Image (cartoon, rainbow, N blue to C red):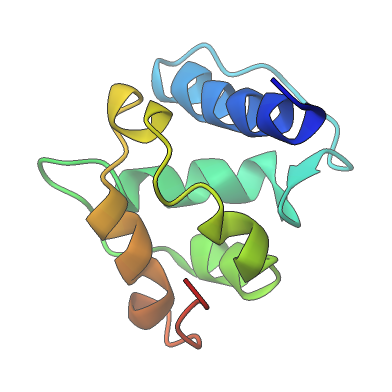
Amino acid sequence: MNSYQKVAVLALLLVAIAGNGVFLQLSHAQNICNISSEGLMACKPSVTPPNPTPPSATCCSALSHADMSCLCSYKNSSLLPSLGIDRKLAMQLPDKCKLPHPPC
């Protein structure tokens, strides 16, 4: 596993940990694809079935600063479903936030 894949796994684990209510305080300087851990957590309810919520202003703001090419690299990750993240819902977030469609 290369360092990029390790970072991806860490990001997804952070989402899973926070989703289970065991949120660890992280430095605001830590981010994945230019999205802070707070931004990732703000978006999780919008990409989790069966009743996803509309993306919050915090989620959309975080996504507006994201490196979309970087995020696209997670599109086909087998970890997403195991963490309860629906790929289709995740790909809909930019449109729901009225942001340009990602290049993937």
